[in-house]
Image (tube, rainbow, N blue to C red; front, side, top):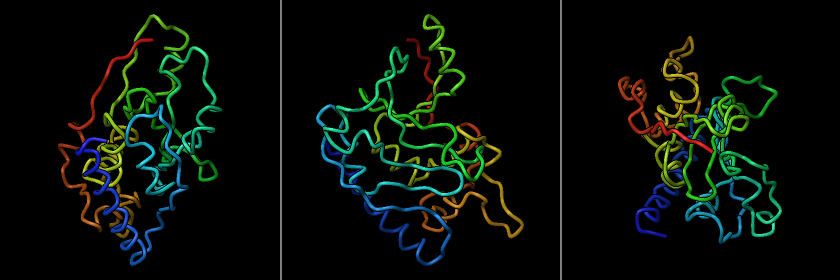
Length: 218
């Protein structure tokens, strides 16, 4: 693993320790679950096993982030389901938004990880189905990071989290507050209280400079 990713992992480790302390003090109602200790899988891009060696699930009322069962170890990876003719190469789901789904459901739209090059991105499910049915056409996806370490360091536990909310749910949702003036997004409350993110940069929320729109074809 290169030095940049090693430093990113150390930042994630430190941030997890910080948010556990802040959550214990304030009780925002977020999820921070311990690692399932996945074993290394040689076929995976660098950083995936190491990131999920620090936690298994994170999240609150707007998002969930979690270790895919397929990466628990070599046996689980070998037994993973492959979608025939998947136009995106059977990506792994490492998270999902929850804002649009009923409380009794775990997930809405997914956050995907490319198992070949490590990109973390969002693809509208209707666009995915269109590309599956029409492989000669193209669709756009929103790429958050080129590796999972950067994604969790910046978009889950860092300053780009508001851009993730804006990209997947809508920029107008980021600054929503309840009648007591608190952010409705409990994960954002946690990050703001921890000094890891802010929702004050409206230009970044609307322009999303850290999110890349990429055109894909089968």
